[in-house]
Image (cartoon, rainbow, N blue to C red; front, side, top):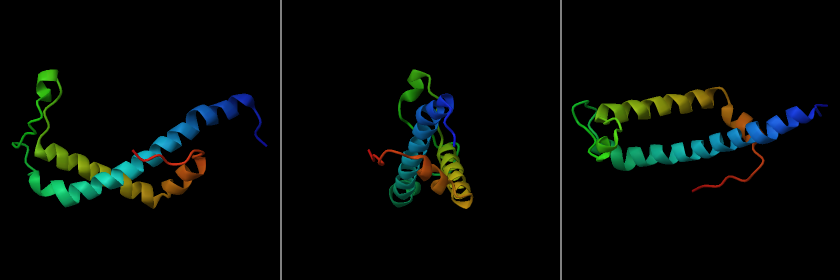
Amino acid sequence: MITDPEVVKFVNEQLHPIAERIRADKVQLKAAFVAWQLKIVDKVPADDKEILEDGRDKEGVTRLSGADLHAFINVLTKYNIVGDEIGIDDIVEKLCVRPLEVR
């Protein structure tokens, strides 16, 4: 049995909260995929000449192109697929101690 107080504290203060954030992020990620496919993808050309005009460049934020947005969605898709392939959801869920809060 693992009873070392340092280990227990680490699990409670580090691992449980990380697992809960991963679980919540996965729910948000799935919702974003649905919104992207149903509402957004057809409005965003996968072209690096098409720039997102959000006014944030005045704040020093890097300007994003349609190609950037498509690339990011592709990375998130791969992240999601790999997570599913290695069974990350089961491992993450086991470490979660609080109910899922969807915002």
